[in-house]
Length: 331
Image 1 (spheres, rainbow, N blue to C red):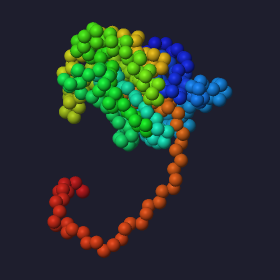
Image 2 (image 1 turned 45 degrees about the vertical axis):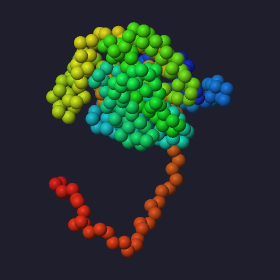
Image 3 (image 1 turned 90 degrees about the horizontal axis):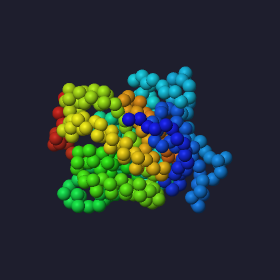
Image 4 (image 1 turned 30 degrees about the horizontal axis):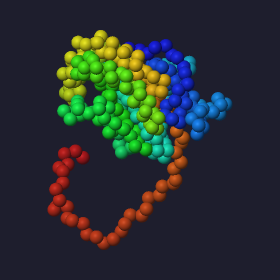
């Protein structure tokens, strides 16, 4: 399920960012250029000649081949993937420090079919970051109490405070997907969701939240291959739920639901960005590089760190034979 043809328009991600982006589009790697414009206190972007360019196609320190033309995708080897992932994860640490320093509130939504690679991408984003700053929210099905609440209420409770980034591994868009297809909501509830969501997201953005939405698109053939891999791998079998299997019998229904969801919620203030996820490693790099391009950040300034001298006194430790040690089966 790819995106529509590229259409560029000025848009704002959060109250202080003016971005020229596509609506919706498949995120390429590594050649994506996004322009940022400083914004006056009036909320109006300054003249174009004051714009600063953040180009995530700048691979001067990258391990990617230099023979490709700009905008042409590069084929990934395992060695290149590891090196490039390491480079991007270093940039994520810089972004994290910028979020803390500037008190940003960032929400990133990950949606897509089962087995599309959302969880693997989230894992690569968070594995070098501080879990107190960058949180993952993956809510289970609503409780009986939550079913009586305003639909968005249980998600609002997990929104970020200043200096935080929250990654939603599935989100309020459950109502437009699984709930719609499997009949877990009424037609009236679905219609109200489609009417309310654009207003809800605009309110989040006006409150100062940077909202970024990704849709991971995977083919039926690739999803089947990944499902079979999970069935055969005892360490991954838990990832395959009964609902995942049932969803395969509703493949077209989910495609229709996704298209309807985009028609209502792909708004200029919070557009959907589509990730071609058949190659999961490329999808991870594409998503991370694009995410880094959505929020301008500077190289953090670090003061020199010196280790203080170790405390030295005459304290006598408890004898080792009075402590319970884990057996050393590996040395």
